[in-house]
Length: 62
Image (tube, rainbow, N blue to C red; front, top):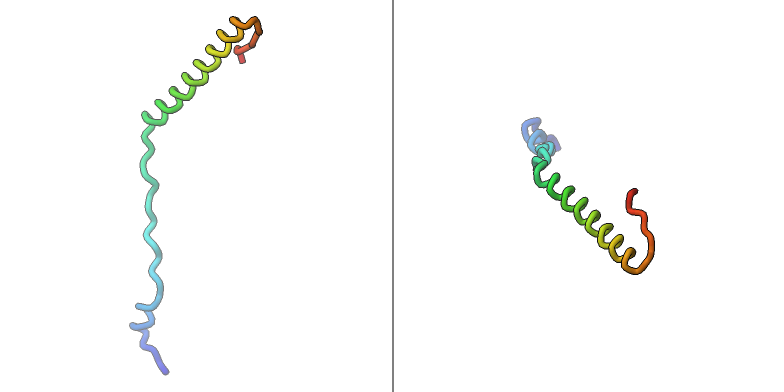
């Protein structure tokens, strides 16, 4: 059995198109990082205040 060259070309797989990753919103990333830092700082301050009220010394300067 013979296959014509034109029909064998149709059988070959075409490469999938390469999709670029979506753009990164740097403002949104900066806000998320700021919120994380603020949450950590608030937690440390709350821990320090609680420790001072209970008489325990906690070093949060790290």
